[in-house]
Image (cartoon, rainbow, N blue to C red):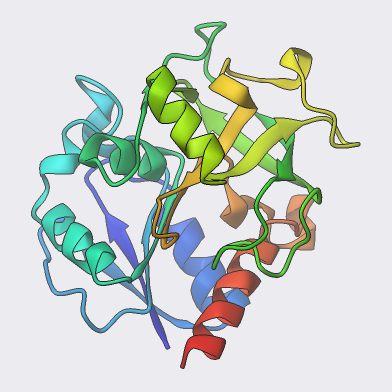
Length: 232
């Protein structure tokens, strides 16, 4: 088993993600430079958080043109697992691998804090170690995390159970008061129709060790391991 973490100019969570996958999860992990295009040897590709290309134009808008993204699209089309975290989620949206776009946070401020997210869909390669309704405590760190999409697309995403995580309180209540950025339906993470590409704004790699205040993020990586082991 082998994982890869894509590095764009401006990525700043690449080493955090590499550390968790390689040293905590225990899977051989490589850095993949944004100009690389050979992805066939990997079981998981992660687009990490950060500020790819300085977040000029829109967050993720320039990274979508990196050579690696054509390879990521081909990899995903063949069923490969892709996880986009924060800026990685933004890149997936800009690349068309997920529907929608990210707007500025409703308060127009950068937000960096722990939040609670509720698992809405536990039947995915990224959440199978959890139960529907489970509440996780995972940090966010973004200025453009306000998920938006066309009304018709939102209906489809909801109908297909593609909403994986929603912002909630610690008891799992979902309302406007616990929505940190203004995202439609309190969306914190969505998956594609095929179910192999997940984008999420919270940072599971920052919540995978007890010393960091939460290990809830590790459930996501454990789910990926479960899925890959059972698929073989």
